[in-house]
Length: 264
Ligand code: ADP
Ligand code: MG
Image (tube, rainbow, N blue to C red; front, top):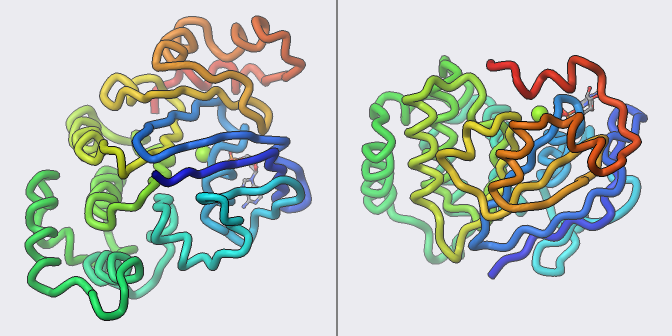
């Protein structure tokens, strides 16, 4: 089992504190969802775990099986986690090259994946996701439409098989068919060797990928944790209702309060 532990995490971006004492534990075998209004720091959490240099940890720690992430290189993190914005920022690398390199980074030098096994695996996953061969061969940052990009990210996840995947808004901009394909991919990964942290703005995704835990994030912290029913309750009552229930002194703007109900 692999455990990701986030402890009292405080993160500043451009001198402003965004995460304000966030605690979270994700084990392999579990699917967690983090929900929260726009601008509350959900993507900041994802970027910080991946080691993005713009996000400065000012207090607290992130551990993977007890090892402090601050002591791990960004490359070493990439094998353990897959945060979805990450690969799209790489220039001049094809999708297949990226996936092969990521798979091999996690294998010993004398046991790199053979071209044959790689292609077999790629064909199998690609067909499962109804993706064309051509799409898998493209350059990473070249000409993917929104929906193709998300589908491709799921392909990468299925190929690289990270222990813990961080999926930031994989549902945004997807039509219902693409959402189903993406969900099928994530559900196919469910096992004791795989954990996921799904960041989403909408409950809809959680109808397709039913999480074991739902966390609500407001003002840079997790303010409530529950099971899949918490997401349904949130949909019915909104973030403002939860804030009142918890007696939180968190002031959402009208835009933030309403944003939950606005479709992409
Ligand atoms: P969410 O994903 O919950 O919508 P984000 O983590 O993207 O929220 O953003 C939280 C806050 O941090 C916002 O006010 C946003 O403007 C700010 N922020 C995030 N990333 C950056 C950045 N790279 N530079 C400046 N501000 C940022
Ligand atoms: Mg975000």
